[in-house]
Length: 233
Image (cartoon, rainbow, N blue to C red):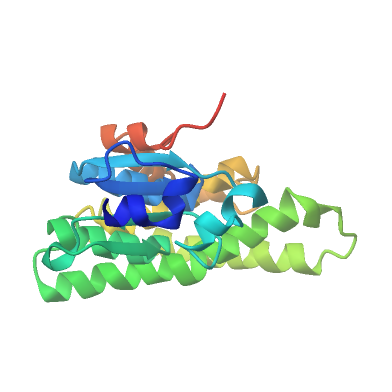
């Protein structure tokens, strides 16, 4: 037996190879972030599709790994000091993988902190705000007659996009060299297309953001990661 096979999550998503990193995820922006990192870093891993249905994310097995019932989560049987580590929260996982491999985290301590600040910018701003925009613009919230919430998140999305557009002036990636900050940020910017919200936030009028997102998704590792774990059907 191993840490992976002993873990409750293994009852619902059994590992074929419990000696390698296990990914429990779904290909939404938060899930794709980690799939991209794993593909870019060339790590051996085994993906498990955890749907967004309550039967999966609120199951006792998944809650044993992530009490916050959100994808993604990982178990790395080969963690620091050779000990296993289980993690949730996509930003924390990106930082862990970057430190584990020494990749996409910059060359110096200062680089690491600059990259981390943009990961936090995505985690605390871009992800939550664009997620709310999607809810109030495309999904259930769009049926509300009061436009206050919808207008609020449209305005905040525009503000955040302006921050990104300015930061990208004169450089290809958000923090200089390609890094985990781009893996965190670009999938969420791309979600504007899924939400049908590009026009309302003025996406195509931005100077740098559209090319940045195109550049990101043109990377072979990113293209592979877009559907990992593969959706059913």
